Each structure stands twice: as C-alpha cells, then as structure tokens.
Length: 96
Image (tube, rainbow, N blue to C red; front, side, top):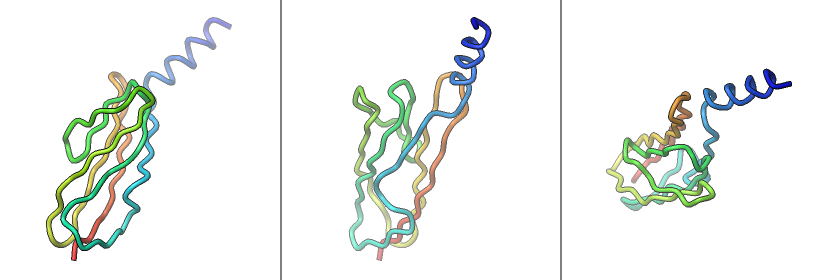
C-alpha cells in the first residue's frame, strides 16, 4: 500500500500540470491590438504567457491583457511544475 501511494505521488510530481485556456478561442479574428488571456492551472504551477510569468490566485486562475500586432499573432501559454514537464498551449489570433 505504501509503495502504491508513493508511486502515485511520484507520477503526479513528474506529469505536466493541468492547463486550461478559456480565452481566447483558437483562430480568433479581432480588430483591436490588445487581448485578455484567461485560464486556469494548478496553484503550485508557474504560468507563462509568451515567456512572461503570470500571477495566479490561490485557486489557480489567471488573466493577463497582452498587446498584439497587426497580422497573425501566436500566443504561447505554458504551465510548469518544479520537477515536472511543461504543458503548453498555443493560440493563433489574427488582428485585422
């Protein structure tokens, strides 16, 4: 029983953290040069949007408004745990 518990704990330690990006939807077309990114991860993860560390609340919710340039913008949202793999989501946004 003890070994099974340690096995589950180790698996959780090294698996990529949960990451959900609610906004924006992928392949979004907009006419403004800024966009709010909204999502959720696990509270012990570190979340980055285009390489910038994003603060989360104690429940793992985050949001950040970013600037965009005309044309296609690729937004990289990642969640990292100290010893685990990263979970990465890319969103494509077209600014007309």
